Image 1 (cartoon, rainbow, N blue to C red):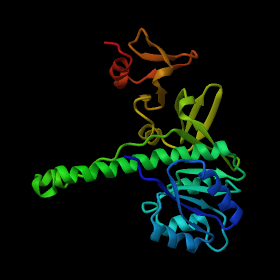
Image 2 (cartoon, helix red, strand yellow):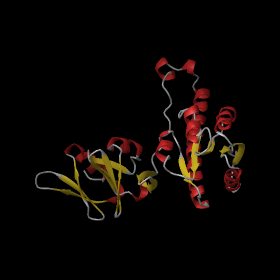
Image 3 (cartoon, rainbow, N blue to C red):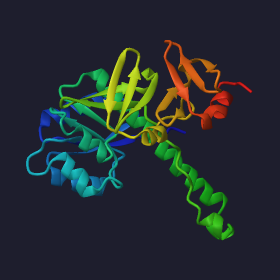
Image 4 (cartoon, rainbow, N blue to C red):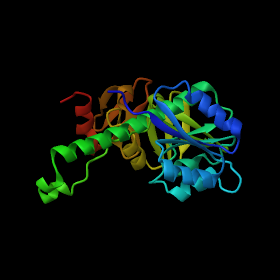
Length: 269
């Protein structure tokens, strides 16, 4: 059985901007354009009435901006959203409002396809969760379950970062997590190390640890998170302290309370 098409709303105060996105979506399978909007109020009304799966939302619109639209609807009620703009100084605000991605005009076809693929994955996860809930409601009606079971919410499939936004000099770039070797605490900042590149972001290690895929990353110290496949060896010092050595020769200290977990993760006894 074919999956349902992704229902898309396109919002831009310029007709050419809307046409550009619609033309690009014409090359994507399983997509239905459910509406267009040229102003913020029109966008709010269309989102509430049409309930699209995905919104391409222009940031700069007269009277009511795309960020205003997202605030009016509310981050929790907004569909998956890709913000589109000629300027990128609003990027962090956009992500705070639950933006899925952020396209800066003029964007090329490859960048658009990357954003849309990410949206398709995210929407697919949400649809899978809904189908699971419906199936469980049929197989195990709430009235037949013990009170503790019927009131227990179904856990959503976790989604993890696939790239990390880096803000510098009014510009936001993105580092794929597949490029990250390790992350080190640096005061109130976290230093993202990817090859010979280093980036500082103002985010806690705890927050990053929770958002990174635990199958790929592990916390080895309160000040270090390492991509597991970058670890070349585990070193033990004379005083019983441990370090991991990465493939590029970098050494990072392992906290004593995490030594057993690191050893197990590396297949050691």
